Image 1 (cartoon, rainbow, N blue to C red):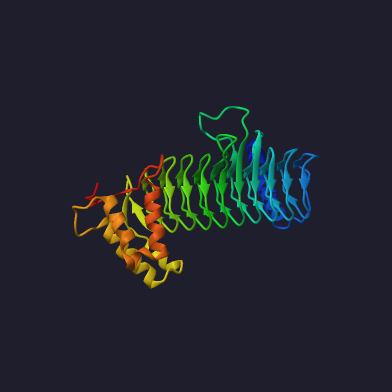
Image 2 (cartoon, rainbow, N blue to C red):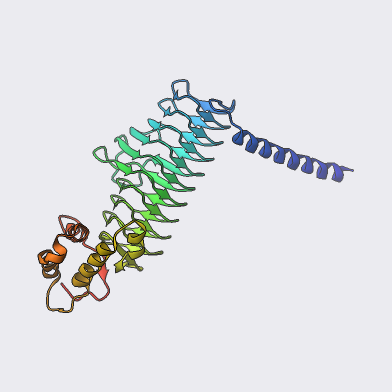
Length: 328
């Protein structure tokens, strides 16, 4: 009899748990605009826009501002001096902001995925406790599950994410990074501090980018690559120590580059990285490119050449090596 009671109580507990889970899902799917679940902790000084929905077990801090139409799913939290724009969605377990000096700013229409952590203290050991640190995120970004995006390491800098980016699951964007617009980071893309990624760049999965590297616009990084130097505009790289593998031709076509522009880029690439005369050094080949009338006035070629030159200026790291590079 006791055994039956024990089994029965376990079954009852399981049924109640299932019912609670079902009720929670129904609550989330039918959450009325402007409703706050009684288990949520919302500080009275928090500023909530119209139609903000806050689910069970959420936390909204005292200096938080939440824009119109935002949705906080169960167990999501907003801390510190954080401002969330209109129509943002925080999925279950998402954390935005931290109780640190400085600010976390999100634009409109952003989705912060399950258990993503956005706007917390950086992992730079040079960060001094009490210093202001900042994160700014634009509009229409899809930041997926378990991603982490950190604030800057000092008050004079800001971690920046632009607009219309897809940052897939388990990515990391470290302190002081500058991420442009319309970028795709596939799963487990990891950016160290001070990395710059320009518009329309695309990474495959499990990519690691060394600190202070620049990734040029419309470039593609192959899966499992380690980026230790800059990736110039329009190029494709891959490898454990990534090397140039040609132009990102498919990406250029998809983004509307004309056949003439692509032909010009291919000619320029071959002249610079696959020269018929191996006696000329790299700088000489770049200079020759800039002297060629048929290419010197093509804007995309000029942009590519300038991207290469910029990588050798100041404290920049140079560009990824070419596997058959015979120049200096």
